[in-house]
Image 1 (cartoon, rainbow, N blue to C red):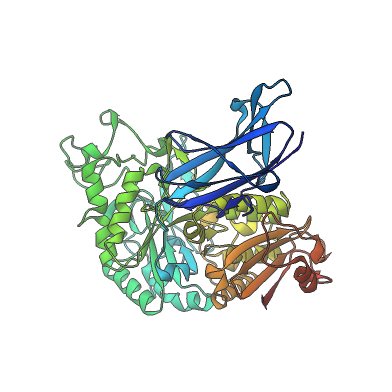
Image 2: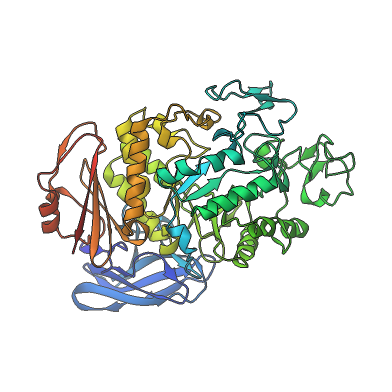
Length: 606
């Protein structure tokens, strides 16, 4: 057996690296020196279309090349190489070279059934976001849990049959029945006035954009059970107060992203009206002649109906229903109302549950306004996600600008808790970088915690030094950093509702706050962290990130271990060619001392 080499992470084998624009070209080159080899074929095709089997041109020293034209439409293209041999008795046979499933290198298999194809993402257009978004540092606010801005601390429009906490230090608690249904929703009373009152705090922290969990009328404290898309929840304040908040935020240089929950509504909503609170003939549950009846799917009317993940409190909406579509993204629909009031963007809840055509309709609505961004809640690699047996089109153009970067949170915890090696993190993110179009990769909404996850400090076992490193990774990776309210204050908590405590205004942990603020300041001061190219390097113990352009670089080295380390630049490896030579790395790093769970950043010029 001779040698066969191919690695799409290196441009001598595939150029350009990563995703390809529709109508673009990519050069594939495989190095084959193997007894009996006669011809090499590139087998490539768009998913669902006819595969191309193309004989590659032989160049010097066993290098076979072909430049492929991506003209079969946008989508995922899958490929491998077919190596045709002539045996000593002049019989022809074929072996297959395909992805190994780990790093960029491939493997040789004997049977077609064993082929594991490489992926190329072919996108329709670059998702260039509004300029403000790429420059943003986002702060996620769960409105009920942030601050009550009423001078007397009173609760706006308290809801019937709910609990109000005695103090803001109380730990949130669900009271459920024997079937797990929540009997009474609980509230602290955070409101629009509270967010407005804390704008100085947010500016001092260093954020300049707000992502608000749902604000529309609902029964619950989280408001993912929308009751009326055209009204703000009275416990938060009035529509006028929301407009005042938006006005002041914009005057102070902030942008605002709202949570769009369009997969389902609340059982007690105007549209379903299970309990009749919106009128005895209003809503699908009360009246089969209701405008809203076709929005829902009933098995046995009215008691059995399709609901989100089987949660009866959340009737699922038929997103293919034209009336519902126009209600959400039509010219005078829900999106248009709030966009005209100055909302700067939307985060789509459970984007997996929304058909691609529905997302495209939302995007088209936003395109009719200026400088709006559209993001989606996707927890995995969004390039190859399959949902409801459909390959999703999220990031191929005219859908989402970007997605939430949950893989960053996963990698952060695994790295800092020594559940994986620095090399493992580099592998995971090079795959993501390869699969995402560059603009989409840089449009990721980076997070290390949200309302759906355990608090990051809890995940890190209360280690504040590791929390500082987590904030560093949030800022250093390509994407827009998003801080979940209270993470910078040292809030802890397990699963919902423990991760939704009231902000500890009287007990902000200064160590946590200073660590977060330091990294956010670096993000503001270093344009490289917004648009600079990106490379990863690693040793057995250390993890490194380089952000760079043609003239400058920023090099960060993180020690996730509980022991001090002396750095040797020659120990670092990478899966791609680095912009810094080994000699320069040794000059910059040799002899540096890095304490346990600490980091350092070096800025330099080429």
